[in-house]
Length: 301
Image (cartoon, rainbow, N blue to C red; front, side, top):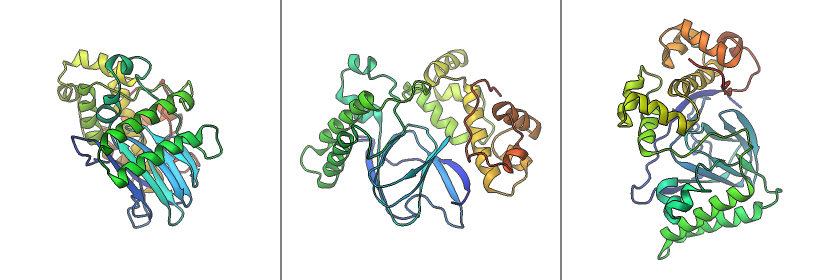
């Protein structure tokens, strides 16, 4: 497989009155293959459930690579960098939806703020695993409602996706060491949209706080509560992930990559990269390390 060329924010055009859609991937072009022998990772603010019905290939997430085959189900959390790279023709259904406007509407506030708050699930469910059949049945029902669009199909989809969340929580929770929250309040979500669209440029804490309609100190507190890390670490992680992809896929100099990813100078970039990953950008470029590295929890800009 070719190297990752870039990482970008995908703006999904979901209807504001029903933030739900299904995209069918059947070719390399459908899978956001960009041509010229290059590939992209992307991320978005919505949930995505991928269901493979035909063909094989590789699914890359921000810190892991998976071979996919018919029957596989992938759970992609908001803002999780990912993409599927098919070996040839495939059929893969990407169910994309807003948790707040589609799933949450089925539950009462008390139910949602209790055991349903901050859901975090496993990345992949294989066909051979226990409870796969129930998960597959719910997905097939969702696809059927979407195709046929009979009277009441939208509330039927809401109920189906709510059932999907319950099944995932009961039988496919994330490992205990993966505790990143996926839900945020509206102010932080607005700030995240701004950060994820502009992190390769010079952005400030004050600008992000304004997007959230909060003062700077309160924004820092709420951001850390919601995201499990500081504002600075979050921005730094996005920039370093982007830099990892460019180091592996382009011939740009380290300085060009540092400035192109939003760092003020090459010295700051080198220091942040080594502190996060224990290796210099140059050594990483020539190593066999994965395309995207997980940032060390102790790393700060």
